[in-house]
Image (cartoon, rainbow over all chains, first blue to last red; front, side, top):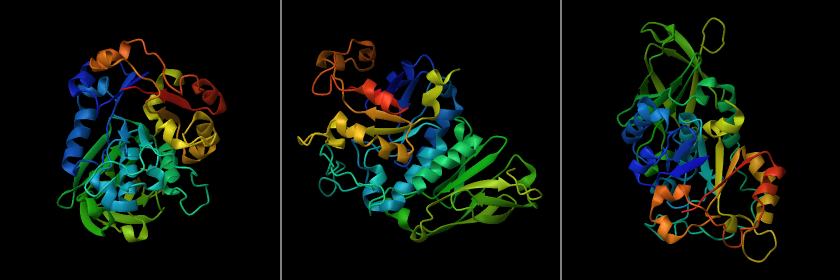
Length: 254
Length: 101
């Protein structure tokens, strides 16, 4: 199996080299680009002929670039990136230290890690104050239990507020995730937005009322039609929603 | 298709520098012994594949050829050359990816 690191390989070479699905490129991060660019790239990856031989591998961080977004966004920024990577691609990864929110640059303005190349012993023991977020595993459980998140070419995005995007994945069961991604510091800022979500099921007809369940928190919200109110509040750990439409009559996934 | 050929389609990869990850023999450098000690930690994170950064190297002349070098013969070099990718695979049911640049 050959993986091509797109960050260091000519893009045309990436496009030309894989002759089958056995070759996969890596992508530095879905959270690294503004929402519109991410949408454009996601569309290119999954809705063109590229999807036939080129599988995007979304890395939430890389050893080479400590992006400003992670430096200034803190833990909420890390979680946003993790949710984006884990829900937009079945194949994703992290570089060592991501789970511990390592985001100290070599110097102000630098995109180099302060600790890159240093042995970080002792690694924190599970249960210590630097225990990885349990949400990390929560996302993996959601991926296992929801078929739509295991597919590659089914992601779509729509507007979420003025600059944010709302990403959705669909199959017979539908899951949606809401992300507000703008400036580096905004990851920790409370957001209230209207998002547009059009379901292929009967759930989101203009007059219909239906329920969506946040798979991260198990909270349920009543939605109506295609435009609905969404709130993100990092102060209480709510940086993203992973929403599944619930069939009103049965309480089961639509 | 079998899992042998499709595992990468839904893998969760943890990328690390062996030399910077865990010092198992207390000589000041990370090593495979340290990595093996931390496999339960990686299991707990939920990763299904481990990507070892820069374990292998290729000659500079070939490196300039970039993607063509992918098909080159790759001599293993340095302190990690004889260390245990294979033993690690036996320790846990994870995939091990190596890289060069």
